[in-house]
Image (cartoon, rainbow, N blue to C red; front, side, top):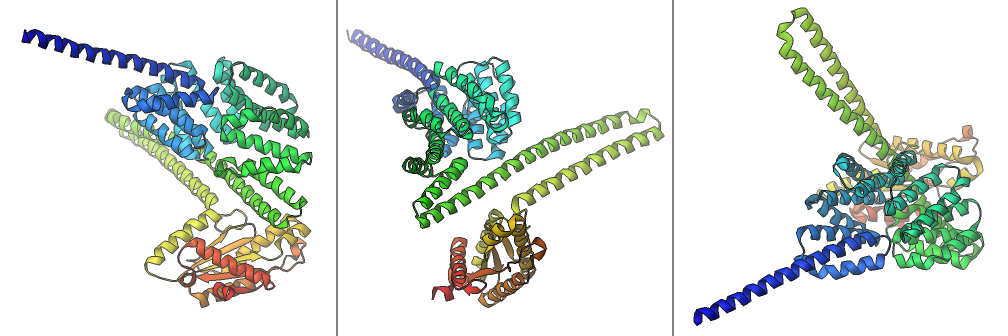
Length: 583
């Protein structure tokens, strides 16, 4: 009887266990379907996509490994969509490094290439593009393979290599890409053509692309295409159509919560409203653009927004605000120029790396040939052997010379990245890095470091009255004159339009003031008459030292800048020490 009761209880427990396992298996299958549904909706219905992820998230620890990585991939997309790029990169990298699913790793790599393009991190982006290219033929799913080509096209679009982009989009269209991939292909293709083609033929093509994407409910891509159409209307001086087009879909744009789309749409509306002199709406949309923190991702739109705000402030006679917005406009434009330079350097660097890799392969092949010939050398006459070896050594020598040439080219690229092309002194980035390193090193031994900042007086007047040639000549001669006053250990850089700075390691106040005065006198001796300019060159100098301002570069520059502006206020063409100015 006791045994019978025990068997009944055991049967009951086993049944419960089997029932729970079966139930959980069914739940996992349901989660599989939910993940696939979320994947299919991520760009067409962002709200439903987010709801599905929120439903699955509490069960994350119970998911299978494959489901966890799939969820992380979709979560990375959600983070990128909301503008949390750093968080998205972290999730995608985890998937790319740890998932056993080849296709999911490939998709994560595509997303990483796109995000690095968005962050202007071209070197990492190229690394993932190379991985995508190498793994392309291992991917059996045609849609995912097409996504690889789309990722490459997007990357080259961001790099402004539009002809390369067109090669990828033509290939995609030749392979009859469908669905969301077709929508993305049309969008990337039209963005490239807006930058390179005859605009008169593009309006209908954009409208056709919008119709195609509307039919498959890809609303985010549809609204991105509408921004392209709005850009086209602006080039045709038709701001009314821009406003009609974008305002009728502004709710869709806001509800999408897609930062790029919101910023781009707001920038276009700000420009359009300004053209029809609707100041209130122009200001409203320009302020939306400038409210976003990560300005490096949206520099072109920031330039437009600050230009609009500056014009509005001038019209409202708010000159302080106009000056502040103009300053931000100039800073954004300079940053945009630096970004463009970085793109060009990235392209050249990638070409050099490809050539160097090919040459290293050739060199290895040459070495293998030498080994093979050495095995057979005993069968040939001594004279013939000497000739063969001599020729091979010559080939290797030529290859080494070629590699040396490549190395010199890379050094040249490094110089272009660190020095100002006009004045041949450090650019702001290299100056800041070098100065920070020196300050950090000398702070440990408490050695004095001084900083001189100076700004050319009446430089705008020279530019306006005698043209940029005279202005450029003034900058070149100023940099050359002051370089002769600086020591070899000093760090001399151009940190703004007509603003320069010199870091003087081991230099106290008296020495720094003396060097600054020498620079000031040298500048006074500059003659611009050959450039047609009769305005004398001078500058206002601000000086400080670490004993007064500390070893933080920001504090040193702020104090020297304060002294420099005090020199300007006192009549220009003079040198003022910060503590004297502050007293």
